Image (cartoon, rainbow, N blue to C red; front, side):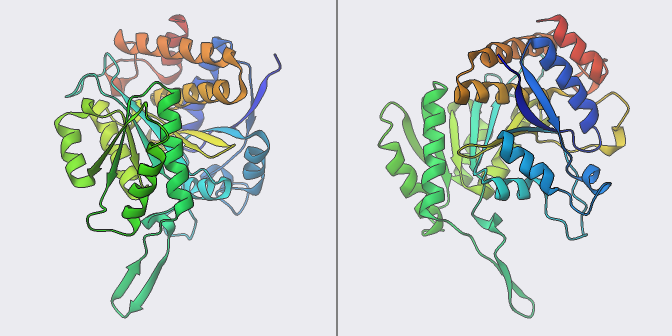
Length: 339
């Protein structure tokens, strides 16, 4: 088979270092990937006026799939977040983040295995804000039938494809009767087409309590934008933090897979950063290519990588943040040795 072109955005800080490690592991797995490197964040500003150059956007539109390292957006200089721009420009309306325990990463909970599916384009993050009068500002929460329906469809399709049994919607429709009311109404309508999947609704504050009491009671969580943002990081904390969970932003025909942690400029270039989150995101990417393009070869490579990094972590062959003593590239080598 010919190599599949995929856009690669190394990012800033530790981004280039962990990207190199991930490329090494992917190549060793046998995955036929031809990386097309593009820039975003501070790396892009070094060569032009934008944190997300048009050439990067056009390249993702052309190749439809990208893997992105952590990017830095300068604060207080008028730049829109790289992630926000990507979601809007490419209509990446669903953020999908699997959250699972890894053997070898000690946490308060065991057997956590859930997926956050977050609506990416509306809610309070729509950016509709104005000054009502001096000293009074207002932010508008936006919900549309189209967006509420398509994210519900995405959640139930994902659940069926991955053999999941239940979709739980977190909401505050008891207070926000119109916006959250529309969200759960459309979720209910979509759920009726998926009789094989259990459907559940929980008020978000009660849902937070239930999550920290016993996260294993949940399977797929469906949330509007703000709740999804909060719950994504909360759930990552249940299994060890942002360094051990993957991330993705997916639309109808384009997808960007990313490490959701920061660029950690204080340890950039020191070969001590943990590449696991980006590697896990790459595994998601390979499975996405298999599901959407029928290339089962990618599923085999994704499984090989997942089994190998799971074994490495379980055996303590990890970077310092996970209790080991390996550098970034040495961790990649340890994974490769376990294929």
